[in-house]
Image (cartoon, rainbow, N blue to C red):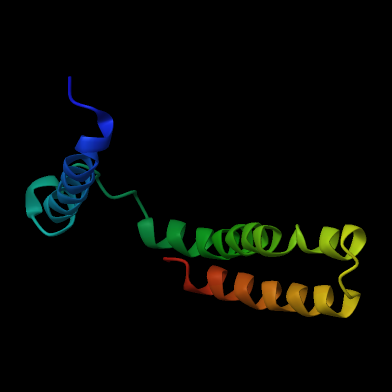
Length: 103
């Protein structure tokens, strides 16, 4: 019987190759272009969703970047000034994440 340890390289290589080929098939070739029809008034729908998407992504990113920072000051006695600076950094990262999110 072949052990899993001896199969790690074929598993890794095949998953990377399948990912790359799948990306080319779905994005570069016109084969799947008609799979998803356009939404009626797509531009208006996209304009309406862009404000909500930015807000949702920004808030989610802010929570992800900063929620665990306070416990370092509470339990591990890290200076609160360091936590506040890191929270401001997280706010900047969240704004960038929301702004750079695909529109």
